[in-house]
Each structure stands twice: as structure tokens, then as C-alpha cells.
Image (cartoon, rainbow, N blue to C red; front, side, top):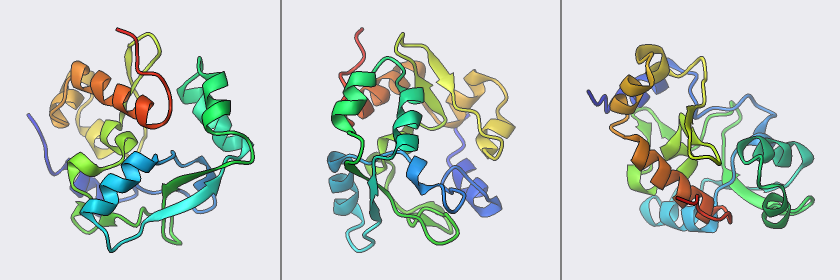
Length: 175
């Protein structure tokens, strides 16, 4: 059964997937121009984005997410180049994280946020990015229950992941 409040409950409990350890901002996922524009249309007064260098650690993290995309990663996120990420406060919390959860409407949230905790490998297999502090994962131990909690399915996750790949400059998954 869908739990529309699990992320808000998690946010109230903290820490969440919407928080970084201060000083680790360089490994935060990128936000594409397409994603930034959608967010700015929905919440124009918040700003919310930081320009971040493409460091070796950032590129290494992308290579873990996209192990077969080494060339594309170097082209889209060249060493020494820049990308945007979500802004965080001095405690490492996303500036869009409010008392009731994310202030960005679901359809306009960054694609990585909308996918979390799911990820799709090059072969199309869906995996779960496990994080100890995720209340949804603590309450829903099986993948099926987790899909239900987020009111999603494998096909929806694959489509959303392809949308993320395109937004970030990668080719969509081949079917």
C-alpha cells in the first residue's frame, strides 16, 4: 500500500537521503539544466542550486553509477568543468527540505530524487541503493513492498531512469 507520508515522516525523524555530511557536497548528484528549469518554474523564489567543480571524486562516483559510460562521463562532466547540484545548508540539509518534506512538487523534483532508492543497471536490472537511514527501507524489507510504498513499478523506474540518463547527457537504456 502506498505510503505518501513515509518521506515526510523520515524527514521529521532525520537524518534523511536529503542530507549530506557537511564537507561532502562534491559527491552530490548533478542537476541538469532541464531539471533546474522545471524546479525554478515551481519554486522560483528559493534559488537552491550551487555550481560545483567536476572533481575526481565526483567523476568516480558517477563511474560507480554508470560503469559502462566512462567516455560519456568524461565528455559530459569533463575534469575541471562545472555542474550544478542542489544547494544544502550549513548542516548539509537540502534547501528544498521543509518541515513537511520536499517543497518541490513530485513531478518537478530532480530525477535522481524521484528515483531514489531505486537504480537501474546497464542491463536493465533494478537495484536498491541501500541507505541505513531510509525509513521506507526500514519499514518495507522486500523490494515488492518498497515499490508499493513509493507507488511505483519496475517499468516506471526504468522509464524514469531513462529520462534521467537523457537529462544528464547519456543515451537512454536500450530495450
